[in-house]
Amino acid sequence: MGIEILIFLVSFFVVFVCTPSLIKVSHMKNLTDEPGDLRKVHSKHIPTLGGVIIFAGTLFSITLLIPTLVATYPGSLHVALSDVNYLIAALLILFFIGIKDDIVGTAPIYKLLGHILVGMILVLMADIRITGFHGLFGIHEIPYWASAFLSVFTFVVVVNAFNFIDGLDGLATGIGLIGSISFGVWFMLSGAPALSALGFALGGSLFAFLIYNFSPAKIFMGDSGSLFVGLILCTLGIKLIEYDSSLIPNYLVTISRPLFVMGLFAYPLMDMLRIVIIRTMKGVSPLSADRNHIHHALIDINLGHGKSSALLYAYTLAVVGMVFLVSGLNPTVSFLLVGGFAICTLQIPVFLKYRQRRSKAGIMKNMEHHHAM
Image (cartoon, rainbow, N blue to C red; front, side, top):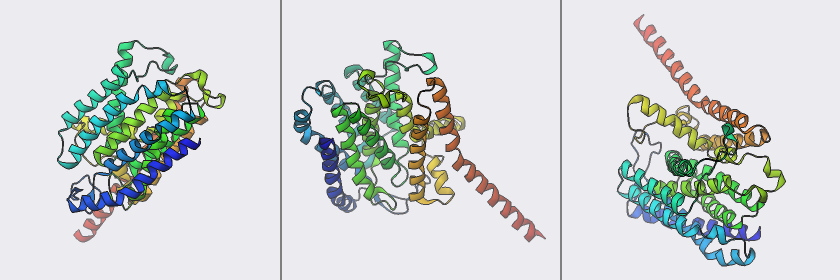
């Protein structure tokens, strides 16, 4: 466990020390996000290049300490490390797509094509893919073509989902931190040091970045950060789902791995599904921007950035807790119970916003009636 903690601390230190300089340079070069857009919830110019330092801190700690990792766990890393070249290539593509979008903007269709390309690299070349449903809906193994399509689709969806929720101080950073540390601990307990190290490296970077990104935010991670975080977490999620059951300790065997991963991604996935449905019903592009996110509803009922983000952290932990509570049940029953809990709970802010709006409308109507008399 010592090397994992060291990797976490190195990435934390790099991001913690370097972020203030990045904030200063961003303001000097006017590389900031301007307020005023209807969907934006900040009121001043905020730097948007936080993804640069998250990218640097994570990869620096991993590459610096790979020799130590190999020396600590000899003979147990060759399979995981064989995927590194493809993962780094995919991360670089997404990173530069994100940087371009943060600085000058990128058409949504070109971003989507880049996400598909990255998914194909990891699925078709690195063979990082979902091979079955592990008993969910009675399905176990699926054909290769279905596996490849589902896996590319999963990469595109998860990467975009994390990009979608990066609209509130500390939200995407905190959800990413919960996911990365959870994956790091799970792989550490299951004897997968390389994957555990990747989780802890990202976790250290996000923990340090959260200090500057939590409300009131001094810097945003931007697309370069949210895409980077989404891709690493999706990779770790698929690796966890497909991990060899014989290597998992007994106290983790009964936990549904697909459900555990979906629990960690519950808020991004549920919010994205809701947004896509709403935009499609309105006849607009699913990639267009609006204020229909759950975190916007929390802001609209006057919870503020900090409380809203903390509430969604708690929501994520509660869904994961439900996964542990239903462990050992039929996979389909477990999925329906956890899914029902996740969907219903997430509608509470929308209901409260609707109720508040109705209350204000009633007050205004009474005032108008009073003045008319």
